[in-house]
Length: 348
Image (cartoon, rainbow, N blue to C red; front, side, top):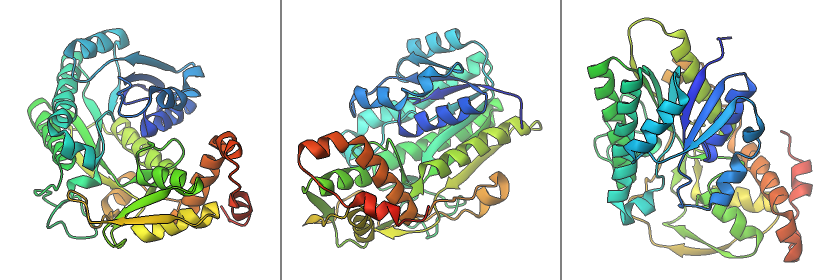
């Protein structure tokens, strides 16, 4: 066990950020969150994300925006000396990035560069950066390996995340920053963003609303349970704490290392809810990857990363959480699900 650290966490009120803040505070680290409560989804949901961790003595929150140098200066001044920065804040989503590529570049690229500059000015030499499986694009071989050149992104979002990785390498090369980029593969679990597929489909199927599926249902994703992702991020943080020699630049995949097709994912949710889906099939969407699949050889060897929750069990856990969170709405609308009967038979 390492001595407690003081960590600046951007995107602390988000899905992954709030879970990470809870884990770090629970083990005794001091976490200073930085978040702008971007209206991509409701502030109320983000406030609920951090409701538990706000009560912890080791957590504080500074509201500010990565695109504002003044906000970052204010945050670093207020925080004082920190041991490490975990940079999760970003605009996410492939399809919204196609509609607004300039905004995505401002936040994900310029905002990241702003953060690097403030780290440099404040003497912070250790950074963990959230990247994405989306950086693997055309010509990437499945399963995806960190050695892939990732030179052909298929969406503005993917391009901005790859740009962040390249900017991180330049920061390491020029200024000796010890830097790790973590490529997350389709993270899901309690508090998942409401716009993501699993959350959207669960909500629609439960209430008997139609869902839109694009293509023929054969596209597949490497879905990763939130606790497994947090295990990987914490391992990367601890690797920095342990590493005392020359600064390094590292990239690691964090995934579930199993693939599930779009149609199978919908079937899992439907079975967990005990409710048949109403499907509206649509043409394939531009910008979407056909398949994602993480090769975990490197992250297993260097981080000890080992995902524990397979997709079948993860979906049952997620659906139980979702039903509990929405039980009043379900009752008001007279919706009776077989979820709990299903859950009781599920071996977690």
